[in-house]
Image (cartoon, rainbow, N blue to C red; front, side, top):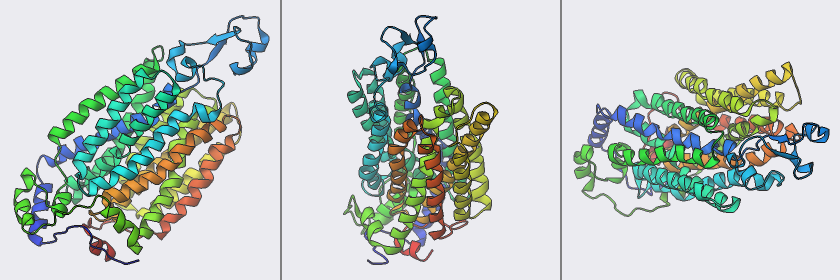
Length: 480
């Protein structure tokens, strides 16, 4: 391996840097960065929408004197005709398609297919933001695919078509958060960088929080309506960002692309700028530069462990025996203190120490939920579950900002995309573990707690970046 590989076009003249900073301080840039960060709202909605559309509805006995029916909450062992659904059958895919007795792999297939699509999309799309498409056009393309595929789920006739469309939706969603984070942080100057990053996480909370509210309001309607009410606004937002959001000044500086605000920079870079763009050049740099590869592996391990709690807790919320809408709403609300904590920690504490403390705290409270409890103890476990999720959210937020600071502009989007890829591996498995946790909580809460604590230790292998400037090229990153 080599320690540096300048495979991408570069320009480090002081004059060009001054133009970049001048454009970053444009009066419209803060508003444009806020508009860009708003993409996290739809990212949050689509990530957890299957908690409600794929939930198992409650059933009721047709005969009040049927004691066998009254003593069980599982309709699979009951005689046909002795029970019915307490709500309309079309409120969930399980009741509409008769999947209430299907195995956990089949019932969790749409959720797993969604995150599998995120995995594939992340590998294929994230590198395009560092090469031919740039940040803005990738964000537009990702939002477009996600919203169109999400809208098309309303015509699904069975779970197989539905899962296929969830895969496509996940494919598009894979780069929404990544492109929005990188673009919004690169549009503004240093003093706004962390605040804009945290704002994106707050928007994610807003998207997540609107889900249980919207699902509760529409609980008597078809599950298909929830997809329409979340994906139509997403499509409108997609058109908005295409017309009103600028491209990243740092990406333009590295690649010499034209933009109105950067015409001076464009003229300068066009004199000898290399136009041979390699779609996967950023991936090659990540894999062949020793120091960068080691950083990538470390943050990916941390992302994997954190994401088991991050994705697993909302899907396991019903396993505590509490109201599903209340449990998910509390998880969503915990994103708000997580965002505030992220802002506080990134301003006052070193990144890797923050991640280590948060992952340990999350793991311990997750383990506390692994034991069966009822009554007061069950309510205490609900509080422990919320604290564990809040800690994991904060850790994930800090990790994403940390990742944006560790890697240079030339490979930043690809690197953060791979960090999220590692987390999506947990997203694929977590719904299955959550389903298994209905019978044995260790396979959900216990497993999640152990993994996040072990993987959080990898943060100790990373360099500290607090207070440092973003870098543009591998050579700068190697000396940072």
